[in-house]
Length: 261
Ligand code: DGL
Image (cartoon, rainbow, N blue to C red; front, side, top):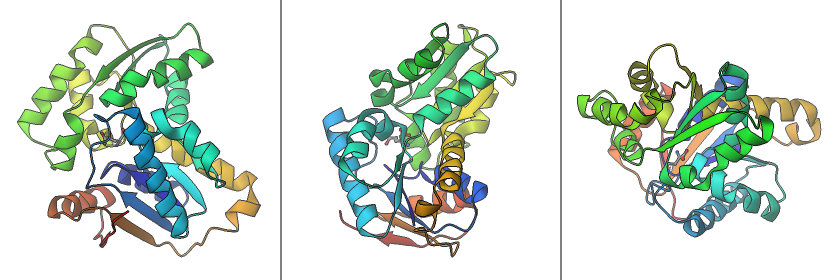
Protein backbone atom coordinates (compact mmCIF):
# COMPACT_ATOMS: atom_id res chain seq x y z
CA UNK A 1 0.00 0.00 0.00
CA UNK A 2 0.95 3.64 -0.45
CA UNK A 3 0.85 5.25 2.99
CA UNK A 4 -0.23 8.90 3.06
CA UNK A 5 -0.67 11.15 6.08
CA UNK A 6 -1.67 14.66 7.04
CA UNK A 7 -2.94 16.48 10.11
CA UNK A 8 -6.49 16.10 8.81
CA UNK A 9 -8.49 16.49 5.65
CA UNK A 10 -5.88 18.27 3.51
CA UNK A 11 -3.91 15.17 2.58
CA UNK A 12 -6.97 13.81 0.80
CA UNK A 13 -6.15 16.28 -1.98
CA UNK A 14 -2.91 14.25 -2.36
CA UNK A 15 -4.85 10.97 -2.27
CA UNK A 16 -7.00 12.33 -5.08
CA UNK A 17 -4.00 13.48 -7.11
CA UNK A 18 -2.26 10.10 -6.70
CA UNK A 19 -5.33 8.00 -7.52
CA UNK A 20 -5.91 10.12 -10.64
CA UNK A 21 -2.28 9.93 -11.75
CA UNK A 22 -1.62 6.27 -10.95
CA UNK A 23 -5.00 4.58 -10.51
CA UNK A 24 -5.28 1.13 -9.02
CA UNK A 25 -2.75 1.33 -6.17
CA UNK A 26 -4.07 0.53 -2.71
CA UNK A 27 -3.80 3.46 -0.33
CA UNK A 28 -3.80 3.69 3.42
CA UNK A 29 -4.45 7.22 4.70
CA UNK A 30 -4.07 8.63 8.16
CA UNK A 31 -5.59 12.01 9.09
CA UNK A 32 -4.61 13.14 12.56
CA UNK A 33 -7.91 14.87 13.20
CA UNK A 34 -7.59 14.67 16.98
CA UNK A 35 -4.46 16.82 16.87
CA UNK A 36 -5.07 19.08 13.86
CA UNK A 37 -3.82 21.69 13.05
CA UNK A 38 -0.10 20.96 12.96
CA UNK A 39 0.75 24.34 11.49
CA UNK A 40 0.59 26.26 14.76
CA UNK A 41 2.69 23.76 16.69
CA UNK A 42 6.43 23.72 17.38
CA UNK A 43 8.78 21.77 15.08
CA UNK A 44 9.49 19.31 17.93
CA UNK A 45 5.81 18.46 18.29
CA UNK A 46 5.25 18.15 14.54
CA UNK A 47 8.29 15.83 14.30
CA UNK A 48 6.93 13.65 17.12
CA UNK A 49 3.52 13.42 15.41
CA UNK A 50 5.06 12.73 12.00
CA UNK A 51 7.11 9.85 13.46
CA UNK A 52 3.94 8.38 15.01
CA UNK A 53 1.93 8.83 11.81
CA UNK A 54 4.63 7.13 9.72
CA UNK A 55 4.99 4.27 12.22
CA UNK A 56 1.23 3.66 12.13
CA UNK A 57 1.18 3.51 8.33
CA UNK A 58 4.21 1.20 8.09
CA UNK A 59 2.82 -1.11 10.78
CA UNK A 60 -0.37 -1.38 8.75
CA UNK A 61 1.06 -2.38 5.41
CA UNK A 62 2.42 0.80 3.81
CA UNK A 63 5.55 0.22 1.77
CA UNK A 64 6.17 3.80 0.78
CA UNK A 65 5.24 6.99 2.66
CA UNK A 66 3.90 10.25 1.28
CA UNK A 67 3.98 13.13 3.74
CA UNK A 68 0.88 14.88 2.39
CA UNK A 69 1.45 17.81 4.68
CA UNK A 70 3.65 20.81 3.97
CA UNK A 71 4.07 21.48 7.67
CA UNK A 72 5.40 17.99 8.41
CA UNK A 73 7.40 17.98 5.15
CA UNK A 74 9.07 21.27 6.06
CA UNK A 75 10.20 20.36 9.58
CA UNK A 76 10.26 16.55 9.74
CA UNK A 77 11.19 15.15 6.32
CA UNK A 78 14.93 14.72 6.97
CA UNK A 79 14.25 12.92 10.23
CA UNK A 80 11.55 10.65 8.80
CA UNK A 81 13.70 9.79 5.80
CA UNK A 82 16.68 8.85 8.00
CA UNK A 83 14.67 7.04 10.64
CA UNK A 84 12.67 4.66 8.41
CA UNK A 85 13.79 2.28 5.68
CA UNK A 86 10.81 2.83 3.38
CA UNK A 87 11.01 5.43 0.60
CA UNK A 88 9.55 8.75 1.80
CA UNK A 89 8.14 11.59 -0.33
CA UNK A 90 7.51 15.19 0.67
CA UNK A 91 5.36 17.82 -1.01
CA UNK A 92 7.64 20.88 -0.98
CA UNK A 93 10.27 20.07 -3.64
CA UNK A 94 7.78 19.16 -6.40
CA UNK A 95 5.78 22.34 -5.76
CA UNK A 96 8.95 24.46 -5.81
CA UNK A 97 10.00 22.88 -9.13
CA UNK A 98 6.58 23.40 -10.71
CA UNK A 99 6.55 27.04 -9.56
CA UNK A 100 9.91 27.71 -11.20
CA UNK A 101 8.70 26.09 -14.42
CA UNK A 102 5.63 28.29 -14.37
CA UNK A 103 7.05 31.66 -13.35
CA UNK A 104 8.25 33.99 -16.11
CA UNK A 105 9.10 36.90 -13.84
CA UNK A 106 10.64 34.64 -11.19
CA UNK A 107 8.40 36.32 -8.64
CA UNK A 108 6.67 33.64 -6.64
CA UNK A 109 4.22 33.88 -3.74
CA UNK A 110 3.84 31.16 -1.14
CA UNK A 111 0.99 30.73 1.29
CA UNK A 112 1.17 28.15 4.05
CA UNK A 113 0.82 27.49 7.74
CA UNK A 114 2.84 29.43 10.31
CA UNK A 115 5.24 26.50 10.77
CA UNK A 116 5.84 26.09 7.03
CA UNK A 117 6.41 29.80 6.45
CA UNK A 118 8.62 30.11 9.54
CA UNK A 119 10.77 27.20 8.36
CA UNK A 120 11.70 29.16 5.22
CA UNK A 121 11.74 25.86 3.33
CA UNK A 122 10.21 27.17 0.09
CA UNK A 123 12.73 30.04 -0.05
CA UNK A 124 15.58 27.56 0.48
CA UNK A 125 14.37 25.08 -2.14
CA UNK A 126 13.52 27.70 -4.75
CA UNK A 127 16.72 29.71 -4.24
CA UNK A 128 18.78 26.52 -4.47
CA UNK A 129 17.30 25.94 -7.92
CA UNK A 130 17.32 29.59 -9.00
CA UNK A 131 19.17 32.07 -6.80
CA UNK A 132 17.66 34.98 -8.71
CA UNK A 133 14.06 34.12 -7.86
CA UNK A 134 12.09 36.41 -5.55
CA UNK A 135 9.85 34.65 -3.07
CA UNK A 136 7.22 36.25 -0.88
CA UNK A 137 5.62 34.12 1.82
CA UNK A 138 2.52 34.70 3.89
CA UNK A 139 1.29 32.55 6.77
CA UNK A 140 -2.47 31.95 6.69
CA UNK A 141 -3.24 30.25 10.02
CA UNK A 142 -7.00 30.62 9.79
CA UNK A 143 -7.41 28.73 6.52
CA UNK A 144 -6.86 25.19 7.84
CA UNK A 145 -9.57 25.45 10.53
CA UNK A 146 -11.95 26.98 7.95
CA UNK A 147 -11.38 24.05 5.58
CA UNK A 148 -11.68 21.47 8.37
CA UNK A 149 -14.95 23.18 9.28
CA UNK A 150 -16.15 22.93 5.68
CA UNK A 151 -16.46 26.72 5.32
CA UNK A 152 -15.38 26.56 1.70
CA UNK A 153 -17.89 28.86 0.05
CA UNK A 154 -18.67 31.22 2.91
CA UNK A 155 -18.30 34.97 2.35
CA UNK A 156 -16.32 35.19 5.62
CA UNK A 157 -13.73 32.79 4.19
CA UNK A 158 -13.44 34.84 1.00
CA UNK A 159 -12.85 37.98 3.10
CA UNK A 160 -10.10 36.29 5.11
CA UNK A 161 -8.46 34.95 1.94
CA UNK A 162 -8.50 38.46 0.45
CA UNK A 163 -6.84 39.90 3.55
CA UNK A 164 -4.11 37.25 3.55
CA UNK A 165 -3.39 37.70 -0.16
CA UNK A 166 -3.16 41.48 -0.05
CA UNK A 167 0.63 41.64 0.60
CA UNK A 168 1.20 39.31 -2.37
CA UNK A 169 -0.97 41.35 -4.72
CA UNK A 170 1.28 44.36 -4.31
CA UNK A 171 4.42 42.29 -5.03
CA UNK A 172 3.56 41.61 -8.68
CA UNK A 173 3.97 37.86 -8.38
CA UNK A 174 2.96 35.74 -11.37
CA UNK A 175 2.86 32.37 -9.58
CA UNK A 176 1.38 31.38 -6.25
CA UNK A 177 2.22 28.15 -4.42
CA UNK A 178 -0.53 26.69 -2.26
CA UNK A 179 1.96 25.55 0.39
CA UNK A 180 -0.58 23.61 2.42
CA UNK A 181 -2.51 20.58 1.23
CA UNK A 182 -5.71 21.97 2.70
CA UNK A 183 -5.68 24.98 0.37
CA UNK A 184 -6.59 23.25 -2.93
CA UNK A 185 -10.07 22.97 -1.44
CA UNK A 186 -10.14 26.79 -1.48
CA UNK A 187 -8.43 27.11 -4.86
CA UNK A 188 -11.42 28.73 -6.59
CA UNK A 189 -11.67 31.37 -3.84
CA UNK A 190 -7.91 31.98 -3.85
CA UNK A 191 -7.84 32.28 -7.66
CA UNK A 192 -10.69 34.78 -7.57
CA UNK A 193 -8.97 36.92 -4.95
CA UNK A 194 -5.40 36.81 -6.32
CA UNK A 195 -6.53 37.34 -9.92
CA UNK A 196 -7.01 35.02 -12.85
CA UNK A 197 -3.64 35.78 -14.44
CA UNK A 198 -1.71 34.32 -11.51
CA UNK A 199 -0.74 30.70 -12.01
CA UNK A 200 -1.61 28.64 -8.96
CA UNK A 201 0.64 25.68 -8.07
CA UNK A 202 -0.96 23.09 -5.94
CA UNK A 203 1.43 21.17 -3.66
CA UNK A 204 -0.77 18.07 -3.90
CA UNK A 205 -0.28 17.45 -7.62
CA UNK A 206 3.51 17.66 -7.93
CA UNK A 207 4.17 14.83 -5.51
CA UNK A 208 1.91 12.47 -7.50
CA UNK A 209 4.26 12.87 -10.47
CA UNK A 210 7.27 12.13 -8.25
CA UNK A 211 5.67 8.93 -6.93
CA UNK A 212 4.76 7.82 -10.46
CA UNK A 213 8.30 8.40 -11.74
CA UNK A 214 9.83 6.62 -8.74
CA UNK A 215 7.64 3.54 -9.16
CA UNK A 216 8.49 3.34 -12.86
CA UNK A 217 12.19 3.45 -12.03
CA UNK A 218 11.93 1.01 -9.11
CA UNK A 219 9.94 -2.08 -10.19
CA UNK A 220 11.35 -3.85 -7.10
CA UNK A 221 9.40 -1.44 -4.85
CA UNK A 222 6.44 -1.21 -7.22
CA UNK A 223 5.99 -4.97 -7.01
CA UNK A 224 5.60 -4.68 -3.21
CA UNK A 225 2.53 -2.46 -3.59
CA UNK A 226 -0.89 -4.08 -3.75
CA UNK A 227 -3.13 -2.90 -6.58
CA UNK A 228 -6.81 -3.51 -5.91
CA UNK A 229 -7.85 0.14 -6.19
CA UNK A 230 -8.80 0.31 -2.49
CA UNK A 231 -8.38 3.31 -0.21
CA UNK A 232 -8.66 2.93 3.57
CA UNK A 233 -9.01 6.11 5.57
CA UNK A 234 -8.00 6.18 9.23
CA UNK A 235 -8.53 9.17 11.50
CA UNK A 236 -7.62 9.82 15.12
CA UNK A 237 -11.03 11.40 15.72
CA UNK A 238 -14.18 10.71 13.74
CA UNK A 239 -16.33 13.76 13.09
CA UNK A 240 -19.34 14.32 10.85
CA UNK A 241 -17.61 17.33 9.38
CA UNK A 242 -14.56 15.30 8.32
CA UNK A 243 -16.81 12.68 6.73
CA UNK A 244 -18.67 15.38 4.80
CA UNK A 245 -15.58 17.21 3.56
CA UNK A 246 -13.89 13.89 2.70
CA UNK A 247 -16.91 12.97 0.56
CA UNK A 248 -16.75 16.29 -1.25
CA UNK A 249 -12.96 16.05 -1.76
CA UNK A 250 -12.85 12.48 -3.04
CA UNK A 251 -16.24 12.71 -4.76
CA UNK A 252 -17.30 9.36 -3.31
CA UNK A 253 -18.69 7.90 -0.11
CA UNK A 254 -16.00 7.26 2.46
CA UNK A 255 -15.76 4.91 5.39
CA UNK A 256 -13.76 6.41 8.24
CA UNK A 257 -11.90 4.05 10.53
CA UNK A 258 -11.07 5.35 13.97
CA UNK A 259 -7.63 4.64 15.39
CA UNK A 260 -5.70 5.84 18.43
CA UNK A 261 -2.00 6.11 17.70
N1 DGL B 1 -2.29 20.24 5.40
C1 DGL B 1 -1.16 20.54 6.16
C2 DGL B 1 -0.11 21.29 5.44
O1 DGL B 1 0.04 21.04 4.27
C3 DGL B 1 -1.31 20.79 7.63
C4 DGL B 1 -2.04 21.98 8.05
C5 DGL B 1 -2.16 22.07 9.54
O2 DGL B 1 -2.45 21.06 10.18
O3 DGL B 1 -1.94 23.16 10.08
O4 DGL B 1 0.63 22.07 5.98
